[in-house]
Amino acid sequence: RKMKKKIAVLLSDKDKAPQLTLLSDQLRVRGSGGYSMIRGTHGSRRGQWYYECSPRSSRRRRRRERDCHFRIGWAQKFTSVQGPVGMDHCSFAYCDNGASYSSGERNDDYGNAWQIRSKCTIGCFIDIDAKQIRFFYN
Image 1 (spheres, rainbow, N blue to C red):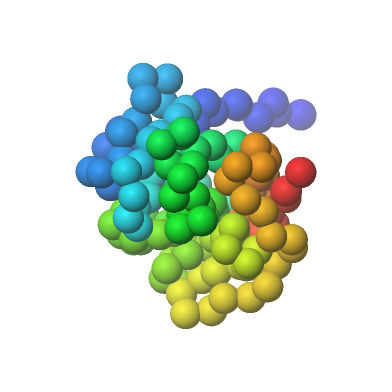
Image 2 (cartoon, rainbow, N blue to C red):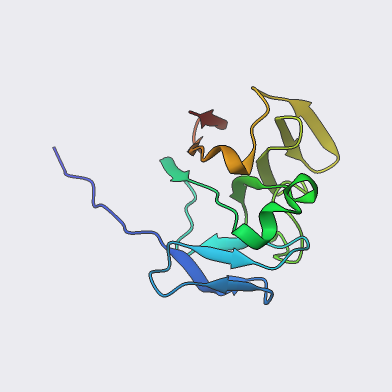
């Protein structure tokens, strides 16, 4: 039985919106507002993949947090980084705003509402071969 090779996927410094600042560990990103996106350093065409994210907000932004929203998900290379993940049919997002699942013009209820300030962890799973996407919230 052949062992599967583990791949370290980080956030890409070459595949991000210019208004995002990628920190040196390539695991954290900061944004200054507006719709924007960053992708990982690797893509895939098959298999099962999972990652987790713990969204945080700076003290300055906490005052405006009611107007701040967060999406996490999966996007193909064709999706523009100058918009939110889930804005087109080549990306899928789990949104904090009303806990919805978004892709293109479709926006379906999905799970419970969550907030950035709740210090949650969001898990993102995709099985490309089975065409399944799931999101987990703790």
